[in-house]
Length: 225
Image 1 (tube, rainbow, N blue to C red):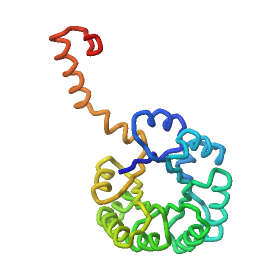
Image 2 (image 1 turned 90 degrees about the vertical axis):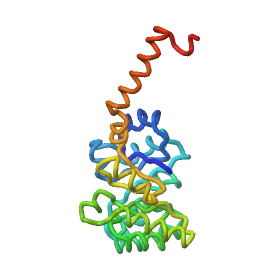
Image 3 (image 1 turned 45 degrees about the vertical axis):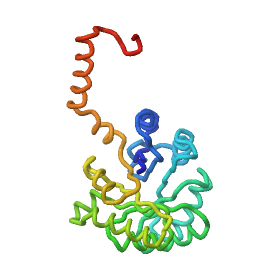
């Protein structure tokens, strides 16, 4: 399993990387908008400097036609680095762009996937990652678990060099379901993940253990023994 953070907030990345074993960062125009009028390439290069080359960085295009997507992808790779995965929406124009970009050796993350046929086409087009939008699919009464399972089956049957990067989550339960359905990786907001660990029950259990220790040994640490 792999985990990515879905954010462009520099402070959150620095903070939560200390707590969670992330393998990359995903971004899109909506995420960048929440950070204000930031320098597009500047903030993405800063993120790269923080996460290093060993982790993946996913950056989205904004054009709606294949030619525009291709030119933007080239600009993203040129201005950041050659290891960036360019996020391409899985539309008809997007699939066209994916094939062209893969022919140039550019990494592709197929985004905005809501249906099985979109995922299948992205696999055939050579996408490195598939990003099914789980919560949005669920809102449309689409079974995202079934879709992820189908994608995983097709990837394995065809020996495709592709990973399922589950995205768009409302809660941690959806993340768990995506992994159990076959997603190799997922991208989540770091604050959502942190919230799942900040449960009162966990805090109480930790406090109870400490109280029982202190009841016998007083204010002595294990390192003091």
